[in-house]
Image (cartoon, rainbow, N blue to C red; front, side):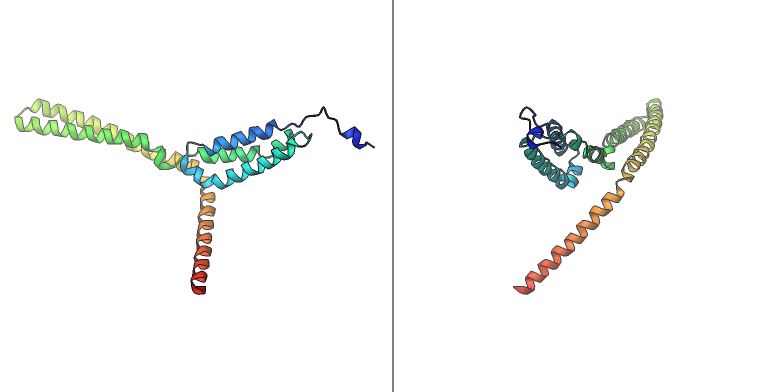
Amino acid sequence: EMTVRDLYRPEDKPQFMDIIALKKTLQELKQHRNKTRIVSFTGTIDNGLSKLEKVEEELRRSQLDATELAQVPVNVLKNLEDCMNVQNVQAALVGNEEQINQQLMSIEKCKEIRNIALSDGEMSIAQEQFYIKAQLLERLNELVRDKFRIIGVTDDENRMFSKIHEVQKKAYQETSAMKDAKRRLKQRCE
């Protein structure tokens, strides 16, 4: 059996650097580039930060080693980061949409040149513009196929989060209904 004196050793320092590292990770997630996802997880991140601050505070007053404790939320943080890294379809299509718009402008410019050439009787230039337009349309077709591929890939990436979205939507509807009911009750009381 050990005495209190055996358990207490002033030279033992608290080990809480892993907890500080977790706090840093959460703060980085709070500054994540995917602003639309941050909104969904702000409460979770803030709650995690406040709990870790309390744990750190307790550890600073003790001689405990928090290495094992710090491993508990690692998988949750990894999943949270994965959730925040998935982009929505609109964001995934930005580059493709720009290319499609440039291609459409090139086709329009080609059509204008062809029409001017036809009106001036320059059949060789008009014929060349028909070939150029055909090539531009082929490239446009590739870009549209690529657009559908991007939509499919993004949809596959987001599929695992659809349940989360449904839960959030249902929770929002339920809280809205509760707020409306409380408002109506308050109005009746006034």
